[in-house]
Length: 217
Image 1 (spheres, rainbow, N blue to C red):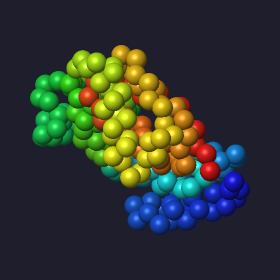
Image 2: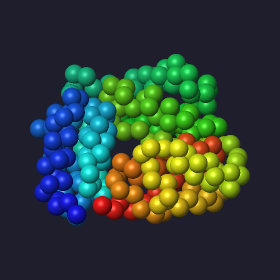
Image 3: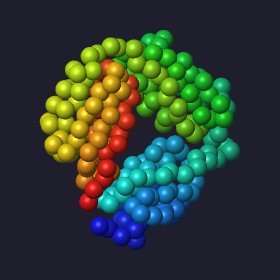
Image 4: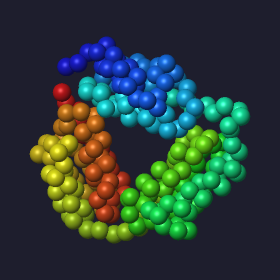
């Protein structure tokens, strides 16, 4: 069992290791393996990268991310400008179906709604807009409309886990109820837990993943 102090030291080292992150802008506290990140950064991407870096450290059970995005006044764009850029970004992304996504922007927060067939299309829409200047956060409320048998979903996910070198499939139980998948069992890192969730989301017909995997060291 790793101590909170050793986990904190590794998280700080990992933040320093990332070229896109200024670790002096981010505060780190650890209690019972749960990492809390605080501070202020100047882009949404840096906020995401900091969370990803902390979650990759061995011993981290969860990441509470309280980082604030604060753009300089000179580079701050209006909601109208952000919305226009978001619409164009979605238009030129070949993975996003045309005229299927609606965009609303409020105080730098981008809200995506609409209906697509596949999870990768939903994810592609979010990725297309989250790196735009002045975007503080992206709320992805896009829904999926394809229908797949729950048993088929379960089997596809189990086989995907077995193929993955990063997931210990034998310790994970997959349950499918309609378009919702529940993962239970044990994993050995927060990264493995996230990989399992991401893999489950890739299965056709999955709308939601209840990730109840426990991190055990």
